[in-house]
Length: 305
Image (cartoon, rainbow, N blue to C red; front, side):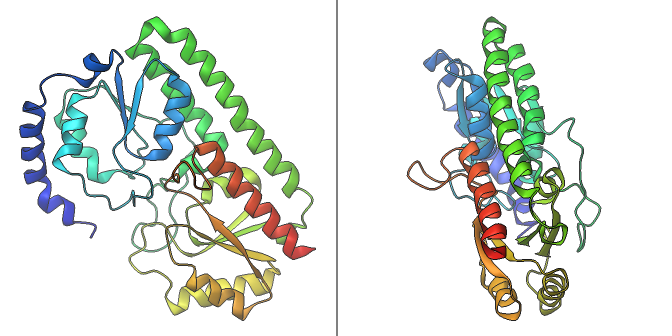
């Protein structure tokens, strides 16, 4: 699946140019607001908090979409050609979109620029950047700074508003970070462990003072092999980890094997790559962070009690 989109790339781009040519004008002009196009819903929500009412923010992928292996459609590329600014995460997350960004004459910002990058460990992508930098509230304050700068260049008239919105949002992000650190500080050292199905929480774990362990690394070619599950069982047993977790986008069956083989409880489901719908558990990025922080704290302390 990793290489399938490359084979279709030429057809997608050709179709996109046809759609763009038939579009009949810029959406920014129709809405009287510049259009900011992001690659996935988490970035769109962060961007909307910075933009306020001055920019029209859209996401290419929809709620619940798998961001890593997404295959862009001609309409997606047409959207990109009509946008006033394209915002992506970078760090290899949106490889499916890179060549199309290069083919359109639209300003582009990579919001992870400036983040202290962690590498993927294990499997074929070992040594490549772990793209999930947005899972740390500390990192996302850098995302916000990059958005404030880009939005101010796009729309100088409202630069003061973007700065004010960014400052307020950074304060909320730091509040989530401070709360998580304070609550976890009471745990014994060996129990400050975040054990998940996939290695998508490296940045959150680092910045919250947690030891990360996972069944398979990000972008692994093989997931939940007997050897991977056995290694996590050994870790959980040897460290006395009270609870383990799994991401919403993958099956938790492998982690349930860990639960059955150890004294650990299943602490709950964590969200990473996508927001939920408006009526779901994580309709905004701050909701996602707070949900994950609450589930981690309640899982580790509840099981330890």
